[in-house]
Image (cartoon, rainbow, N blue to C red; front, side, top):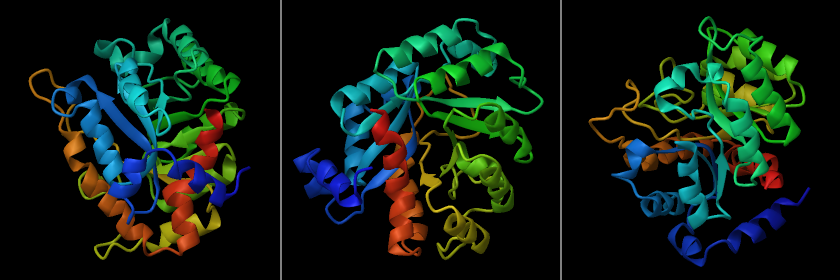
Length: 298
């Protein structure tokens, strides 16, 4: 494993312009970024990358809708962007992606191409699907393990047990659990103890999209339960932005998705509570944990 100092030497050489633009900002790894057909007309690939540079995002996990749109950012910034393959190959059938028999072969081809180094974001819902015995769902997770490709998974469930059944069944698959699981710290803590193959990311935990209690309080301080959990598992947490808007709607054909307009505010939100952690812990969550998990995949 490379030392932290070595990582920064590597990253410092990525782009001379970036060092000037974001010299006063700590390096960031964002593991939850969308670039979609409904965003392209208002945010070009160049504009998206400029926003990442402004915030010193040195590592960006991008999901495209359709999947190949992630390649537009990757081609412009191959040292910064890691493309994940989102298996929604038929946008009209997105909610039932796990019933599409073409999905496993599409995932395998994407990972084998070397253009994608992870799978996701994929959505699963307890009581809706996929069923835990779904052949397509389980085949996708097994293919990801075969390629040592992390899977970023979004679960809609009232407790951690649904995700635990998945990670216990697929112990060779590395999972990134989106949105801090959408649950409170105690539930996330139980999952982390049960599954050593799960990492957790804090996206959509912000003033715009938080459904329940936000991770940080009104002063920007991480709530005590989350601070304690991160201190217990310092190498298991990451951050993300999830720049989609409006959050209450699916992709609309009659207007563009302006989610990238909020991304500066999302980084400001995260940096505010991260700055209140110890420097070592903040650097781990902000950058190093994701770097160590994902850089070796490239």
